[in-house]
Amino acid sequence: MAACSGGGLAICGLVLQSLLRNPLAEPYLLGISAGASTGAVMVMLLGIGSGVLTVGSGAFAGACLAFGLIILLSRGMGENTGRIILAGIAGTQLFNALTSYIVSTSANAEQSRGVMFWLLGSLSGVRWPDAVLCAIVIVSGFGVIMCYARTLDTFSFGVDVSVTLGTPVVKVRVVLLLITAFITAVIVSSIGAVGFIGLVIPHVTRMLVGQRHLITLPVTFLSGCHFMILADLMSRTLIAHQVLPIGVVTALVGAPAFAFLLYQRRATKR
Image 1 (spheres, rainbow, N blue to C red):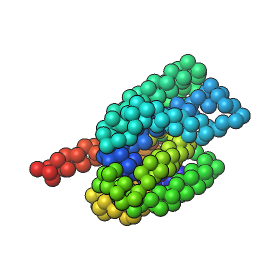
Image 2: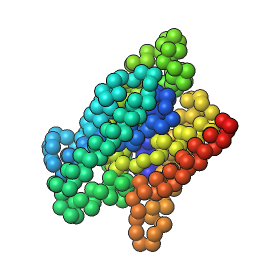
Image 3: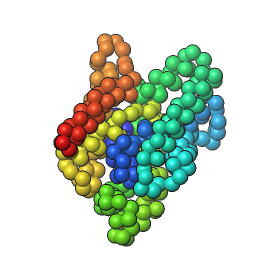
Image 4: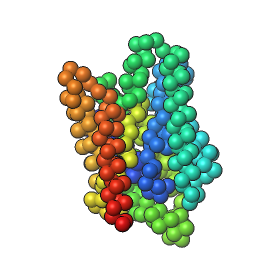
């Protein structure tokens, strides 16, 4: 489960950064993870869609709703993708506030502690059916994304160049954004919201192997797998007789790593 979720979040971050041409794009920052968390919590605690919606279905609905709201706020996906990042930050805060409100008003103390620990990311409650579902979804999604590897290369030159080269921009964006939303929703419904993997890992792999997505995509996936496994091991061993939320570990490692990457890029430009 750690390998699948780490690889899935990493490729989602890479795809979003390529589609939006923004190095800060990732599922957590764009509000997809926050929306998926809200949808999952609504099913778990409020019983919305009980008997019809599973936690995974609720998470997917929340992820799609969050991203739809962000696109609406940003007024489309033009060349000014900075709007999408700002709208994503606003959407993240909104859905995090909704999740906190639901937890604080609809759960008892024990449920609140369990849900908040889960929202920070935890592999402790994963069962084999969750791992199998996650593996099927992520491997299938990764296969579809690999089919668009050469198409993603054209986005690095801008939308106008992509259209000139015959790329169906709207179709590609819709397909890949739905895949990233679905992958994120499945991961969030299983282990909670984990940040920084989709942000840091793509930057590291681009530094190592370059910009070609045919190579970058599989390397990013494998790097995300290894990073999440190591983070899980650290969460279980840093403090004796206590398991830390895995999101805490990824943030403690990812934030300094991302700051170092920004500093190194700035030094290189000079």
